[in-house]
Length: 283
Image (cartoon, rainbow, N blue to C red; front, side, top):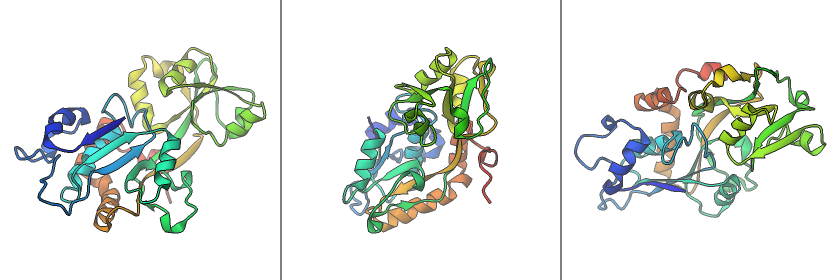
């Protein structure tokens, strides 16, 4: 699935879906999504690829935090790019693409710990952290579970999502000490938990607010373990094959996006504003 933010003909269709207020773009002229063809020095479109197809990153067709990011980057990098394309791919295909020679793009919401680069000359450039996050362990309140490390998962039935790797839990599955039942989507996995077909499920803190609104009675039914499964920071992974001026601009934007008024409004609407200190205490 590819979402393109390229020219004024698409702007009117995509702007409402992106959820960005019309005040982000100057009134009238070119709605800033498409850039004049008389500027060949501009790079584009900037290609974003992501394997996050669930909330808050994707909440419905062409909506979600990744689409908001695509629109925000297009606006803030105006003059350097002709447009932005966001493509959702399985994790394995993202891995293949970023390893290809002369890949020129950006992968949002990821961590250096999740990607390896055998050739330092081809290693991507990592931005400053753009989000603090953590993985939560969910259970039902009628059978609450407190996570105390991977060993505490033994003897339980874990709901997972197809294709997801759980580095702490999968060895227990392989040894038969933990049972794992997978669903095709995160929502289906949460439904399995609510039906009592699994004991536990993992969920990122960043998606918690959305699911609380999506699933009636979520807070009355679901227990969130006091100790998260893991804490981490999300970054932008930037290709070295992008033009240097664009790379530097993207790094600058990542460094300052937390103080950008339009981006803060986006984070507020997704219930993510002001929770960084709660999620992760960084020395």
